[in-house]
Amino acid sequence: MPRRYPVCPFEPSSGASVKDVLEGMERVSFQGRMLGAAFRIWRDMLKANVYIFFGLAGAMVPAGMRKILVFLIENRYLDCLVATGANLFHDLHETLGRRHFMVDPNVDDHEMREQGLDRIYDTYAPERDFILTDHYVMDFARTLDPAQPATTARFFALLGERADRDKKEDGLITAAWRNRVPIYCPAIADSSYGIALAVLAAKTGHKVTLDLVGDVVETEELAARYRTGVIYVGGGTPKNFVQQTEVTTAILRGGCRGHEYAIQITADAPQWGGLSGCTFQEAQSWGKISAKAKMASVHADATIALPILASGLAQTGIRRKKPRPVTRNP
Image (tube, rainbow, N blue to C red):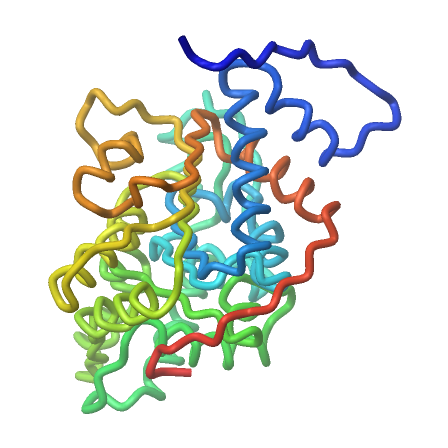
């Protein structure tokens, strides 16, 4: 028989903080309990001062999550960001003062196309504005030495330094540069960054070389040096890239500790075999997650769960000593 923990009916209170709500939710059932558990485990990670890898997939920045992620970076509630190129491109787009806009998801997309408007469900941006951001990336890339390969962490550190001078608002890339948080983008070619760099090479012959294997080496060094925890918003390439750090460490150094803390927010299910819905238990069979890890999987829309978790963290007042990154690049 399992140990008995009675369900405690949730009691609304006019004086309750988001932190109070999250703590109360861990004593209810279903995804409410998982959201409360994710909050507790995230706090445990911060108190234990483990190295936190944060994987970011999905259209989170155009959906309005940019300032949450900036908050997490500036308060050292994550140590290393692994993101899709799309999120990082939309971040630069907003940092330079351009916007995303709301739209009815049942809009006529043929009309949107005729007006040069690119839609992401109930959100859009003008194509002409995206092209301006493309040109900003190309202008930046011209300053990079084609003969000197750069990891994506160095690419985004240098881009963050430049964008910090030109910014209209703060973003992930600028905040990460100022706080020395490395950003890795293992599928950078699968984004407008890849398009911009390809156009630059085709039109001018200036070909930027990115050292993606160097990304693997650097993140393995981080996983080997520190006790680690992982937080995933969505899945895809960022999740797999972070998960494989433990496998790489096992091959290079022998043994495999696995990540000691694990949180994911996903709307996908495991039975289709995709990584976005993959359970942490499945990852334990690979040695990616420790057999004794503290884990929580929240099956919810990240635009609901992430603002609640971040607001709760803001109310904890936790101040964290930051482990020093061991990447070779600034």
